Length: 338
Image (cartoon, rainbow, N blue to C red):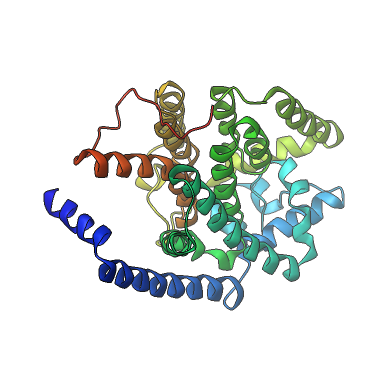
């Protein structure tokens, strides 16, 4: 630890080291940006975006968003890409209606996803450290573009995970209104709705947004009662695909899906009981991710965003005190909003 602290001290006091580090960060960030943009706009295959569009088109036509392949028997989740299936609740089919505009919207969505994540990261860092110079903002942007490359690498699919991660960050920035992004994303991907507990923890506005979300689900169910049954059938028939490029999930190591759900609930309970807000927020991000049957690199963006406040607070304490501060401390994050 002393060696690491010495390096940090030199980096903070030597102009030459700071300049060299900044140039290196810019180079790595530029490379990451180029890779992300290439995946998003040159090699885009729209595997997920096409499924969103097809599910929304079927719903708009009054048909069930779920395909015969999904309803007839077991199928691997990755068989639903490219329009062959729709795995989200019926409300998601309506909220994803803009994807029916086709490729022009797909490209715009990818651009918005990239800008949204980087922008939210910059705002979160600024909240924790205070005002930033232009140089520091560029450095943070480069670090974010590089760190979140794990998710941006899958932008070729046109998926919604980056925007869910950005929504997660907005919940930390504006906790009073955090129920809105939590429930909006929850109407599409279900698990983000767990963010409602964060709103309640922070004494934010949650009853109105919850009533609206419940009303949307109820109206769709009344108008199309079969769709809810079809969605549950499609979920029951779905099996983890576990492709080689995915990460290990509970299902992909041979454990029953219920184990992932129990682990997610345990993390959710730990998030609620945590004394520090930054610890609670990270546990919440993990609770949204751990139960997934297939965990892809893009799914990691949610817990990565959720970890930012804790990482900054612990780094600040370590640099100030000269040693890592245990995260089990009962002291709340000083920067989290009440």
